[in-house]
Image (cartoon, rainbow, N blue to C red):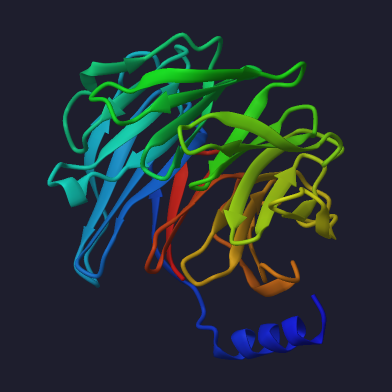
Length: 325
């Protein structure tokens, strides 16, 4: 992270366009719990949000200058929904489905904008709220509840649990996965990593027991780096192989708690915190890459990014902001 990284940062900052607030919606009557960009194309954008008000909503915009409208709203059984994960099936000629992890210790499936969840898919046996979901290579779905990580085989019509890992202590709060690894962020401040073998076998390969001073609320992965944020207010970058510290940015949100992370389509790292701001970071140096995004009047609780230009932020009051970045 030397002179070359600094030079690249200056070049990127010079070329960067300012973010545009496309819409701000009072989407829910309680705090956002999760969000997901379903589609981020030039002609159509679709976003999913869930809330502690127990509803699951879909927002849609047609065309480059279209209006954002509510396309669907459900109050599915077992709510609230705490986690969302996209199972992209379009390449197989099937509609995309979304896995939802809920308060009732289950993972269900939804094919938006259907009026109900798919009653044929229900992944239970969880020991508590399903706080996070992660997809790996299109073959594996990972879910977490309490101190337990579960691995599901996606090659079946109804995914089957093939592995379970339980930690000695500390609930798992967030997951992120690549084709060959899955990472867990934990309430005791630790971060753990498992390799995923050719047949799906899990082997713990790294553990950073005191990664943060308080609970680790979110993690994100980009190339060789894993990023984490915490109630301790820090934003950190880790070597994704060894979990050795690379950059430690304390007081990332002015000493306030940091709740969420997302890697933006513009290549920047985004974080949301109790200071009501969405902050933008250079992913190599973890220095501010641009001015924070300011539109929320309450703590920012969720972030989600599309693949083209869309960023979604949601706050404690149920408001949803849609940005072009």
